[in-house]
Image 1: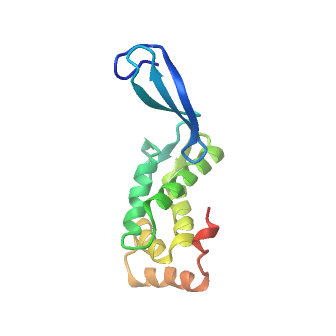
Image 2 (image 1 turned 90 degrees about the vertical axis):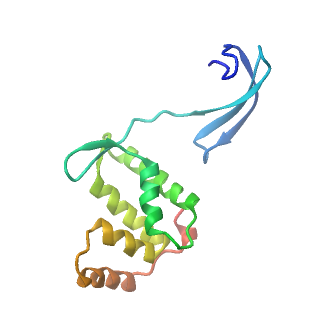
Image 3 (image 1 turned 45 degrees about the horizontal axis):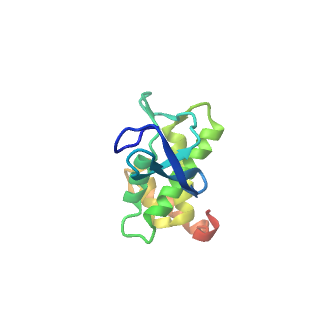
Length: 159
């Protein structure tokens, strides 16, 4: 690895720590040439996960895109961005373990619905209305009946 400042190849590790929820190692390094310090992260490289969209096209899974869509449903709700990032990572890991490198957008949407139901029923209804393409008030009635029937799981039990 080259020093980001001078390009020298030799450096020493000053400190190593667990990072990113125990999925990476953060290393503080010092270049032996210019003596400047920099940080690197090491993590296991996992197979890429691809999403098969409704129209049959494929694109690489993006946790950021998933967080963005969930954050729209959670707007003005008491759910932090960190919690949504954790949910996205949890969903990604689940599909990496269960699938052969591809997962349908429908499966991802269903998993997001399950997670949002546990977190916040209002966010769940908002996400479902877009994801399931609600067109009538009766669509809302049916999902609200489910929310009334099944209480959500307290946030502390989801992670």
